[in-house]
Length: 249
Image (cartoon, rainbow, N blue to C red; front, side, top):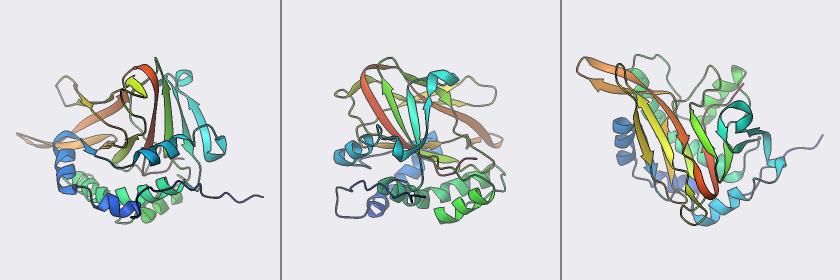
């Protein structure tokens, strides 16, 4: 039986990707997550890294499954889930981002009265997932053509769910595609939904709540429900990589 090999995706900068992640303005990012439920991570990837990840899409050897969204009522377009071992760059990004987000996740759960806490190391959290039968990798690469869109949804794959995830835009708006804005909606109790469009440039990422987040009200903290999606692509082709921290059953 052949042993799978990790796909090398070159990091353009000499510094390790974890050092680049560590250098992001995390106090500002955390403040945005707390106040809005999302935050932009500027210049997370270089254009060369974006092109290298996009170039993986045609080769099914990199992936465990392909989803055509229209067949399931998810929208229009398609995406593929990476298989283990993940490409080098994704394999480095996942624990590096988690290391800065697990504190936010724990604080959110505490404020919402949820007993679950997340370990400091992503490997320890994945061990928890795998022991519960959630062993399939969830990082994915999405491809949209003109007319495609992604319906509002939540990426919940089993009992163990990390409450934040990251999406990275690999294509350049205005050159590779038009339209295709990243959209979040937030439903607060007894209120109409609030929509937020998050502008992204090539290589930018958005960190956002997977399911719900805490909001401070006049009578204490309450939970708001979030969904995310992508508006209609008007021209061109758009690629995004999604970094989800829990694995799937």
